[in-house]
Image (cartoon, rainbow, N blue to C red; front, side, top):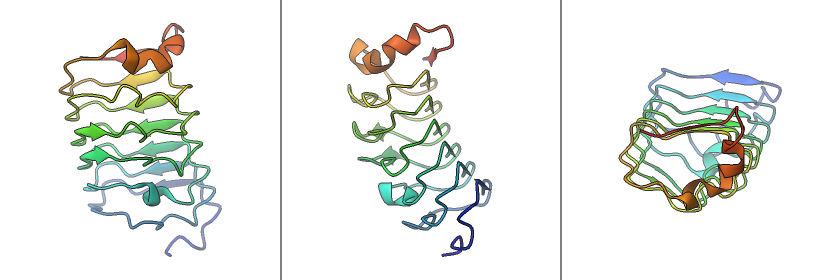
Length: 164
């Protein structure tokens, strides 16, 4: 409960700290937090309970960790999330419900991971998404079904889809 006396905190930067774990509900008192920077640590596991209480979170940076999978409803407790950065991890699998409820998500960056495939409906709840970066993964096929949920936004001049 190190954060219990900081309910008004808007931004928390704890990158490059060799963190290996964030205990479930450790951040639950940070109800006003909008930005959480956890990049360049050694975090390998995140669950839906990792983000309990972060109801106002808009920007989450988990770049450069050791995350291997994104499980069911991992981000369900952060419904206001607009930007999710997961570059340079070891992600091999993303559950089809991992992003469920993220209707405000605009930017999803997953470059430099080990993704071999995406579930067809993994993006189905991300109706505001206009930036998707999947570069430098092991993806063999991206079908219309994968990007159908964001297709209308992709026609917009300000939208970007990166594949390599």
